[in-house]
Image (cartoon, rainbow, N blue to C red; front, side, top):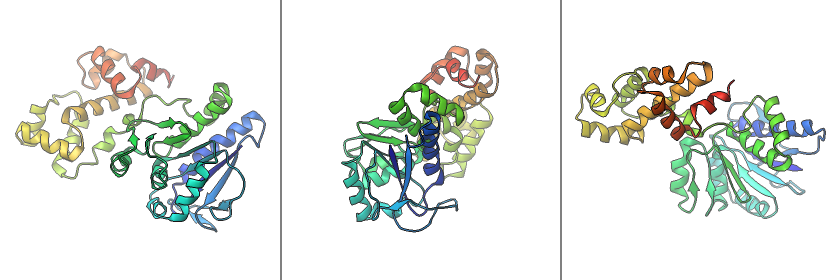
Length: 316
């Protein structure tokens, strides 16, 4: 089964290496090295330098590639814009989309598929930091902001970087069943199905998105004082603003309300403590600013998609 990965100068190395290792490990576990044959297909000939520095030697280019592919993935990376406007790349993708069993993208590779018109009317995922732009540029596409990966018919798209491994593992499970996918996940030390969505990674990242230093400082105050009074009146007073003006400026800068940011910060800290300790849920709730375990449980399940107990079980 041939898996093609489209690569280009400046590609994100892990977008390529992650899925490749999943497919190759699956073939090794099966004892059939040709069960998955990964081919790198370059947008140009010769060695391609990745965004992080290492060079890749594609097996072929879009001009020289021959033979049938079962699966075609488009990798992403900071330089992805360099190929979204290329007619040869668009035409090549459009032609192969009709021939492969499934086509997809890792991270910002979704923008390349979008440029080829392959996301129209589809549900898709991409890196959390690119969700709004992908949706704005493609009004006929439904972008799911919290998804690790999305399958919509023959189209498979994943969130940022390491989520490409989750996507590849889902394909292995689809092809060969849960038992093989579990063996691969164990060997590569990854979840068979990662708990929660992209939101579980975003609290401290969100604190870096505000442009005004006063809002960034307030976000850092929240992160450092999760057990304190983090109501809008208290935060507005800390910022030296009226409640109404504070709420408006915070949402404009952070892209979410103060209450949403506070909840995200508390859940993020709860997640880390669940991963690293066996602290009883009641004490954990108090440590991150919730009045009781039930309040934490409801918020955690709403944000992460699984109950705290089930989330902790993944790490024990």
